[in-house]
Length: 217
Image (cartoon, rainbow, N blue to C red; front, side, top):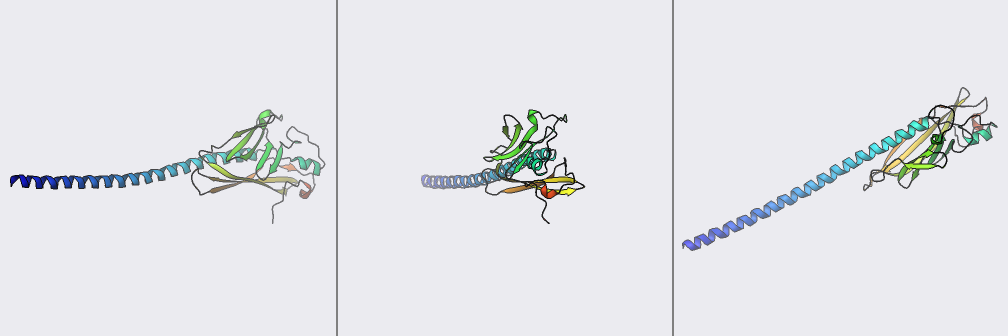
């Protein structure tokens, strides 16, 4: 009789242990799922923040340099029958703009001489923003890391207004990007007024250049 009671108690204890183990495994599994989801969310947030920082730095770099551009498009020389009188006009590298690329020169050290590192510009190559860092030969260097942020669109446009016989040019910059592994995209836009105004010499803004469009009313 004592042996039977002992066997019964042993069986109940084993069942209890198995149940406890099963409950423990279930709790651990649930905790693991929660932690994995939490980690993915945190990782996504960190990636998004990192990509936004990279994009913000790239945009500020573009704005800083475009603002200092020597604005004198080659087409302006022909349209206005003018002759280039300085080192920073007369070539496409000095100011040329298309939908997804801008080229310009700037007098970084203000010595009125064009050094080889004073031809610059920005373009989209693959999914990375690039900056031009040399005149001859032209050198393009990545500004953004595709592992951090992927640039899916880069657009430039130019508008002008004539004020007191000067052409004030404004470059619109639009960058579309997304975090690697995510489907949502974001767009950052800036309006950059070029500080170096172009003298019109009493000539009409309309004859300035096909590339410089007056703002629409």
